[in-house]
Length: 70
Image 1 (cartoon, rainbow, N blue to C red):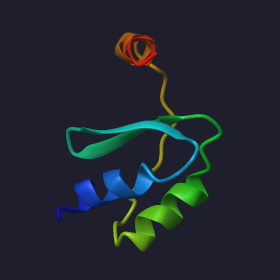
Image 2 (spheres, rainbow, N blue to C red):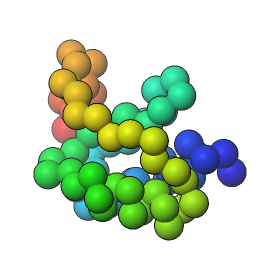
Image 3 (cartoon, helix red, strand yellow):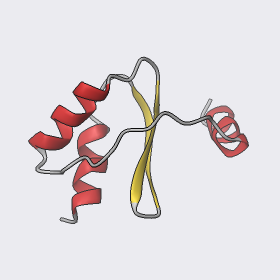
Image 4 (cartoon, rainbow, N blue to C red):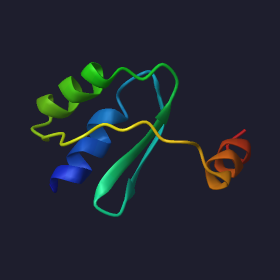
């Protein structure tokens, strides 16, 4: 399994994660009260090295997908 795919699967297991997806050569995680240390630990348990965790703004696409899932 590719590292990004393993990280994607691992992060889906966190209760705080609402959505996680592959975006180019990184994973984009959306959730509430996300804890960087918890994300690093779950990735490490899947043998995925985290290079950086950066907060980002939600996009119009994110809002649309959230509404479409309801």
